Image (cartoon, rainbow, N blue to C red; front, top):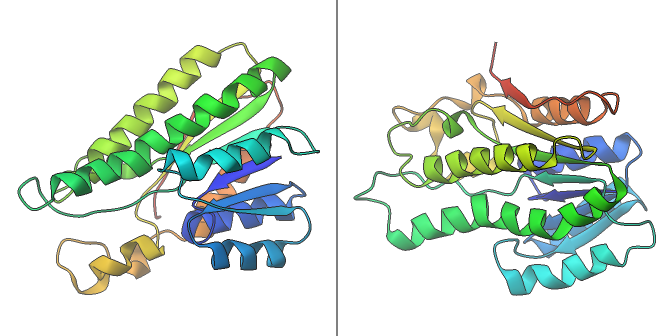
Length: 231
């Protein structure tokens, strides 16, 4: 049983599709109800649509209750993928936008980990995948909100990794370079100086392939970190 956040588009959609094709039951978490319902219909009976805002505790709570009561048992795999991508420097990005980036990119993964790790630990198995970014190690101009949130997500990955060593839980950070997803749409990268063109970006399916490879290694093998770049 897998949980994928931000599952309605981009990397999340590609990961959910790859996992379902591999035979996994997949919970699809995303804000767009119509989009997750349509994706669930496309993926088949093992897909569970779960529209919610992962950054909103009240919106997420009913989904966590459904996960806990699923007849197939609690999740074995959590893919923390949902994210937002504000661009701008410190003087340009409003404090509320900074807070929103932290809420989606960092606090939401923490909330899901807090809820789902105990059952993984009790069963002695599970996989936690954090979708990182090149910006979780390198700060680019205009990343005043995005980079801190992704640096924090990388730190959270390492914290969970240290706390679960020897437990049977595997933690992997999959950190792609720029990837052609709808997150770029507001920024028009093909016509904005300083941004990579879409033609030079990775594809969501490239990231999904890396996730699937990491979580299908033998149980005694942990892939702690994968960094993906365009060749």
